[in-house]
Length: 108
Image 1 (cartoon, rainbow, N blue to C red):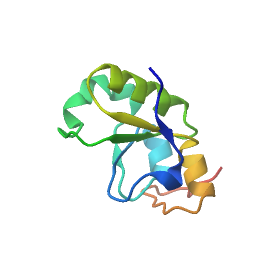
Image 2: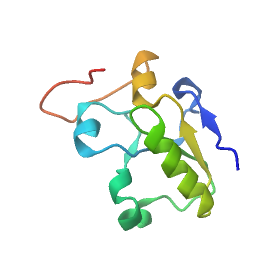
Image 3: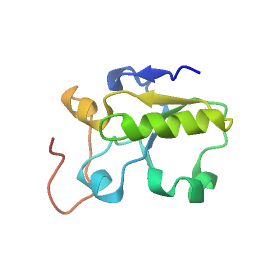
């Protein structure tokens, strides 16, 4: 099955965006509307995924982890789309980012 991938700037407004990066990466900067669900804890936290027929947009730092997570979600009954280029491309595209961290802001 081919994985559907979109560029960060093509994620629809109001889409359900799931950030699968680890806590330190999330703290450094994330999309304001994203849900944080680290790939390393996904299987233990499947109940946190929305019960919806809507597409889930999966993002990580550069697109590798999100591709794997989206692939797994699609194989298990979800409709997941990989955000190609990840938060690196999100940042470079000038899309909004907010930080929860006390330390450095988002740095490439």
